[in-house]
Image 1 (cartoon, rainbow, N blue to C red):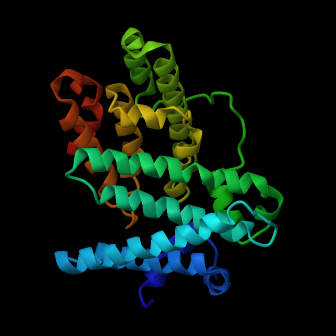
Image 2 (tube, rainbow, N blue to C red):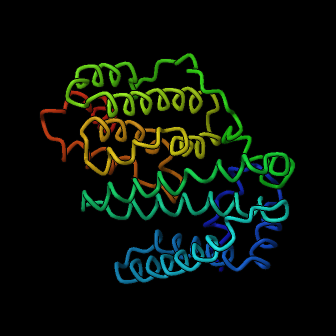
Length: 292
């Protein structure tokens, strides 16, 4: 527990002066929350280790604690009440970050690496779901600052005017979808196009809000993507992977947050190596930006 305040860098990102009281209050009365809080601490300790044996041991401990916490969480998720919704929202956020960290740890094994990010996208989709069910309570709770930073209650489905992004070129991605339209078929084409549009909106919000808000905003993409997109990633569809690589650039911009680290860079490189030269031109901006 001695590393917990360092591990839980939510404090600085939330911008609250005394954030730990309510976190520990929830944990002391909610076993699944305590398990995930301890899992987060073990995960952070793993990230600090140079010794592979210790790193693996802490990561295993984090996984065991997370598994136990999820079992407890699933037992109560169907009963979202006024008195537990804020803790459930915070827990879901932590689980999302933890799942992303687990995915990043699978680098070097492409199939497991991508499947890990698919799992993150699917797990994290539930965060706004919980928030929207009890919006009136969460916006007046201790978690209100982070909900505001994530802009989690923005419900507009209309495309926002897109500010040109120097690296994530959504117009180029749309060109890719157009050139692949026949190969993709109507369903997959529309799914990929929606994913690109949501990525463009995410870029706008990330640039507009700036740091530290953007540290969590980019996670919202998991909720904004169409439901069929993770299946295209499971199929290793090149277009879907290229879109994911561009989202990974936003993740790379937050690399100083210990839970993300080199995850964005590693994912971009892994996808580029997997797809090879045929698809290289669609990833060239990303790879050149990584070099610079």
